[in-house]
Image (cartoon, rainbow, N blue to C red; front, side, top):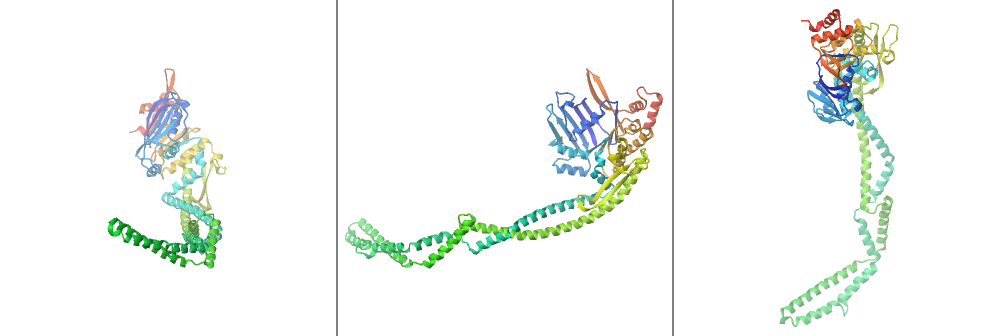
Length: 555
């Protein structure tokens, strides 16, 4: 419920603090006094756009603040969805600076207007005489039937399953699309993979083959070089080893004379040993060199295969070919796995659809029963508020395809007069009839659910007398289940309020302001008497006002 509304610098309002009752709050006032201004200010904390030209003073910012007492756990869930702190006493605040910049806060946390609007719509429901959009909305019409069906937990379960069902369907479509695309390339990718697999690629093979081929192609030069090396070291008269041996002999004759000579000769001996080893190894390497045309041809064929594959795949090495082969393998395995996943997902979707069909059938049966109740109860209330010939007809159509609400399409048709065929409300209902129809609908659903604060903005236009009394009775009954704020010009309705607020103008210092105050018992009698007979009401009007207020004030 809305506990307090504070308005600063809006339209004709300089400063107003309005504390509201938990039951039926009546707002009356002279024509032009600014009753609608209150709603305009309230709409700002419900996410509506604002214009600075409507400020009372262009020299300071406009601030609208609403303090709400909340207990509905479903509302708490909305706060959690937007990551907002939830308090049983929560505050929505809107600030508009003189340059037109707007800021919105919920419990002192900055929020966007969109978030404020979505939260605000769960807290306050404003209904005016011309608000036909809601009653003509198929979603609203279905929600009325669902409320009377008392199957919210089942409907919530259905919607959760349907959300999963739709998500899985989309996932299936995406997977099938990807699989179809992959399948169209599967044969080619399989061919490429087989070709690379058959090539038996080794990471360092190419470099080794190129080295071996180079050696085979130059075998004669290599053999000749090794033989010459051996000859220069050992086999010729002028070879290095015989000369070094003679040098050792020369040093051996003098090494006893000085340790340095001995050390130098040891170095010569070591050099002889190393050169002998080199000569022996050169001989061995030379013997291993065999000119092998068959091996050359074999290597050339293998390298041609590797080069051709690299050119085909536009890469520069065997390592990259191996990477491509692995990627192709992953792609082919993914396709195989996706087929299994698609099959699993199809089974899950079919299971979900079966469950949804069963729940949807139960929802349809519940709605069918609730429709009869709704038609009868709305008809009874319409009769009470002076429309004895009015009736509604709710058409239920079961469609083939599942939707987020089940399988039902709901259409509300209305007829106000005898002999008039029921038709869509927007085509046959006048403003006054529409107001009373909405009053009847809100009246019956308030008994089944916790509605937000409900505001009626002069929905009593076009009615009077006994009808006004009956409308007042119905509005008065609403306060048993919810907070109601009613802006009215009819004394019969004004008298039903638990609290009565009077909007008036102050004209001073050549400036007009709008103010509002809660009326005391004696003031209510006077105000309602004036609503009955005008300024300076007679004693009979005062007595009539007291009679209207009697049920409230009698001991």
